[in-house]
Image (cartoon, rainbow, N blue to C red):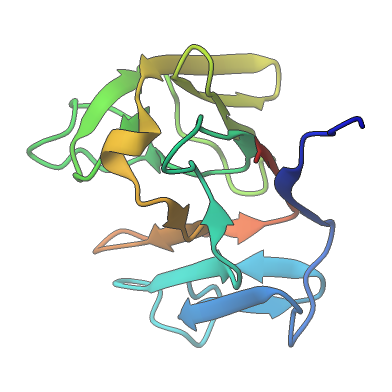
Length: 189
C-alpha cells in the first residue's frame, strides 16, 4: 500500500473586480467599479478623508496544524503595511512595514517615496514555513523594496485565519485601488 500525503491548500486569483464579487466580502467604504477594487472612497462627490475599507476572503485559511508544520503561502498584502503618514509610533517617513498584533511595525523598509496618482505598485507577501520567514516586497517604476522578519505564525495567529486587504485615509487623501489579488497556500496533512 502507498500512502500519499494529503494537502490542505487554497488558491484564488482575481484579475478584475465587479459588483457582487464571489468569494470576497467588502466592508466599510470598499466597493468595486469598472473591474477595480477600491478600498476607500474615490468619487468627486465623496468626502475622501476618514475613509476606511477592507476586502476579506470569505473562507478561513488553515495556517498551521496543531500537531504539524506551518503552511507556506504567498499573498498580496497580508501582514504588511504601506504607510504614507508618520504617526508617533512610525518612522518619520513613508515606509513598508511588517506588523504583528500591533499598529507598530516590527520591521520596516525605508526609502519608499510618494507614489504619484496612477502609479501601479506591485506588492506581495510570502511566508516560508521551514525558515519561518515572513517577507514583504514591492516594486514600482524600477524601484524595488523588500524586508523580511523571522516569525513563527503558530505563536501569533490562530490555526485558522482570515486573510484580506484594508486601507484608511485619516485626515489625508489617498486612493487605494486594487487591480488584482492572488493568494496560494498549501499545508500538508
